[in-house]
Length: 102
Image (tube, rainbow, N blue to C red; front, side):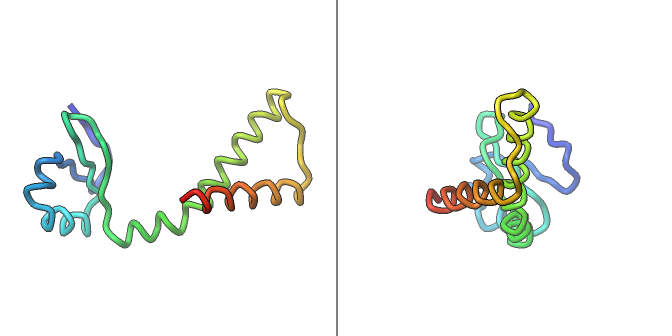
């Protein structure tokens, strides 16, 4: 059984989405929708306001992930600290690689 502990969220099956796609998108304007198949989550549908927020904050999340992995490597003694310029250059190169891969 899938339990979503997210206020304002809804859970629908792929069959329900297929049966009422317009209704699903209407619901997505008000709630985040978790889509399931065989009782397992397989994706989600969000309204445009939420999508715009995701697009706005995605670069910050990518930078956070990069910084977190570097910090873990430094703490483990697998890497050394970088100065600010080197860090920004590596981060920009990684973002550019991610953008070209999309």
